Amino acid sequence: MAYAGLSGQALYALAGERAASMGWRLNHAIKGHRVSDFPHALHKGGDLGALETRPAAGLWILEIQLAHPSEPFGAFYEDLLDLAPTA
Image 1 (cartoon, rainbow, N blue to C red):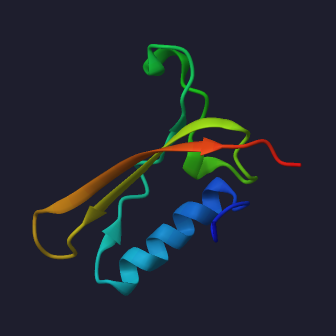
Image 2 (image 1 turned 60 degrees about the vertical axis):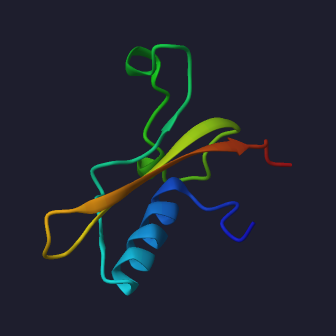
Image 3 (image 1 turned 60 degrees about the horizontal axis):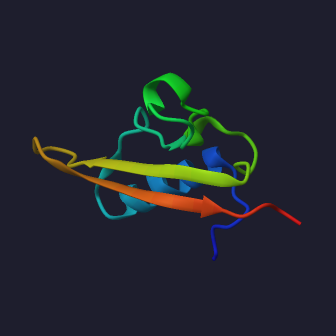
């Protein structure tokens, strides 16, 4: 995967650049998080978009929220990332 090894900050910076290149705005306030013990609100393992290093191995939720630059609508995407340990 071309994005493997990116820090969380670099991943969201890239998402912001890609969104801007298509005329959209990335909502930087919404950042994914590590999946931990249930419930996530009590045991959340950190914000993906705030990490200055490659995310640790485990399950992470990638959250992307886009806003139209002038209209009151946007889009939301969420996916589960299964990051393997680094060698």
